[in-house]
Length: 444
Image (cartoon, rainbow, N blue to C red):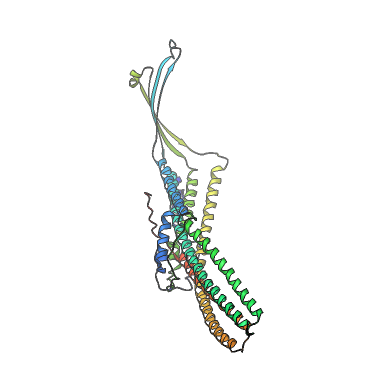
């Protein structure tokens, strides 16, 4: 009873952060489990649903969880008697010797440890928590995969949009060069102005090469995420950037701790370390086991079942001196538990930071996108006025060229700003997301 009362009991371990504060900004829209549905993008939905079944990394993580489930069964088997059967037959020589002749034996042996202090049950609990951590790890991997696909998808759409813009800008710059050459004969245009316009044309072609390269790389990345070979061509219908909904409701900070699978995974690892420490403590207590052996033996198989014997034995193994090994194991397990506790606290703080960063970036990027859009509108108006003044001889073509270059760059910057705003929303959704159904079951 003294040993039993001193055994470490299982208890909930509190979050090692005092006075948890609420998030600085929140919206009202409730975030769905399948967070990407908020974009209302059918093609994105199809891509993510396909990846949940075909992505190899995610499938490997699921098998890791199944292996952890099997480890529970292995550990649980120690709670049951271990039964072995053996059979042996031999022909001994010389036959005229009293040891010679046929020798046949059949026997059963069973051993069972009485789990008096709960050492075996504690080990089973530790494996269950490790399997639970693997399940949460799988769910976190599914969220990461969905976010990576959404990111790649909208980067791909941005690259296609940038390609279309540069195609239009190349055509515009070529048309301007043709117009300038026709005016060069009349002395209205200097040859240096044509050279400057040609340089702008070549710079735009360079941008076109960059976006073409990015587009092909993004298509390869998306194919691999979908479990396909990058050589396979992916055909996508024309798509546009989604209209971002209002900010999602962040909820309470402690709700995030209970919702995010990576935080749940970290907590499950902490609980498994707690059970490992309890098992290490109970290894210092005496062990009681029972052994039963039964055997049939005869020099003639026909008389085998006439001679039998059995033995029943009880054993008590009490550790006395191991050179400090058992106590050192307890101290090691306790240190690992404290390590997991601090890691759990740090993981939680990082999760809070991801949400706060996402909220700040969302608000600021929206302002930046609106600012670039205003700059683009002003640039279009000023360029229109510059062209009129140039045609009337009031402005040099250098002013027109500078204005045209700025306008074309602002068009590309505006697409980039829109993309960054979408990617920041994806990161915010990922930071707030909980688990969702991937379609896999324990039978898979």
